[in-house]
Image 1 (cartoon, helix red, strand yellow):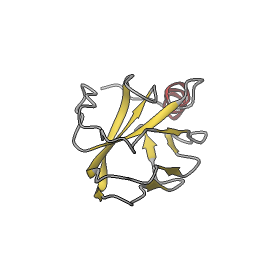
Image 2 (spheres, one colour):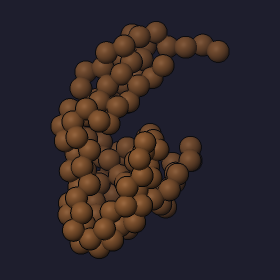
Image 3 (spheres, rainbow, N blue to C red):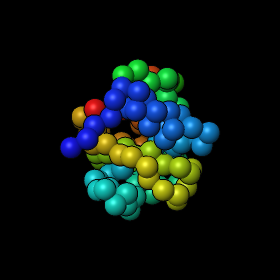
Image 4 (cartoon, rainbow, N blue to C red):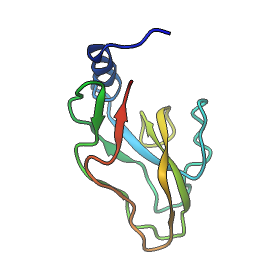
Length: 124
């Protein structure tokens, strides 16, 4: 099996996650699988994807360079188990996804926040 060098890993990250296209984080209530299905994305009026940007990678690793704060939930959103990176604020394509280390139930009046540096992405 071939692998990427650190340079190659950084090149992929810079091309896919730090290119000229805006990227958006979405919250998912289930595993989207490699098909990138976002049928499990939250579907309530108070929810929307949020813009994300990443720092310059080092040895194939990067993270979000700002806090990602979702709007206050006006309804119960359910149990968030995964997050996805999309190429559009609505619909579009899921580029990558990850299971959360800790699933979180979002209820009315909650605010979901991913602090700076907590959305870690690495190629290895």
